[in-house]
Image (cartoon, rainbow, N blue to C red; front, side, top):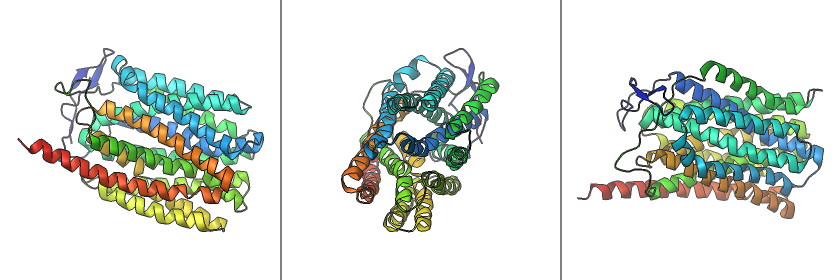
Length: 415
């Protein structure tokens, strides 16, 4: 195992240095220090909000009686805020320490959650969703940056482990939301739980030293990202779109199959349980380097077969089983694609991290909106034909990114 030496952070605190971080191929295990554990916990809180948001919008539609197209606008404004956060992350990260950015993003995310729960109309909750998307994505991006700074070439395992906490929150969020929806407390109380956990984390760890980025002086701030990095970034975005389409419209399919809105929102937890299981498996498999690409291919294959089961059945029970298996397949698409993106960045990890969130925001906005528009025109079942297209595109992007990376490596070896 490796240890860090101290270095001065931009806010004057002592922060871990990346000087002794593992290098590619060293095979050493990661160290789960306080910064890593706090990052895992913060990501879990953000993910609780994220996965409560989809079924919450389903319940909100039942209250406000808006169309599928309006429902898809929630993903659009969230993703628009996410794209804005990604576009501004590099500039903000140059001016603020990792710690300052982490806690300011946390505060803004709590504000977005508060506005969403207090809103009682579509315009008000859409505005809150935009703020939520911006602040939450800034929070997500800085957590990913901290883990990348801290674990270097083993970021694939760290990001996969972080998403185990996210997967656990994803299982709990719709269950808690569905349970509270049946009580006098109401589903909106669900969004207060992560805020309380984040408050406790801030009070306990607000002075925790966090790692600083260590840019390559030869690269500097400018320069273009490699083609492979962009292809993997788009792969990350398409993987997110596959997941978001199921999150936003999966419950609607179950409602069409005969479940109530509350039951369908709760049944979505089967998908999240599959995500949790898939990430537990992924964390074990990525303990050895070099398994990210085969695991991604296997994940896409499982997602494709499982989605066909969910899409083509009229039986609610079989639909729930299909959602569960889709979750297992989807589980590692985001963390492993992001790890490939950062690995291909060649010293520009912050830039790659930020740009990937811009692409995720744009694609994650377009895909559910397109699905919702198609559903209003042709029915939800026909609209879900978009999912196999996305899965096929993800496989093509993975193949293309690997080829581009291999070509770049070969070119760099030519004198």
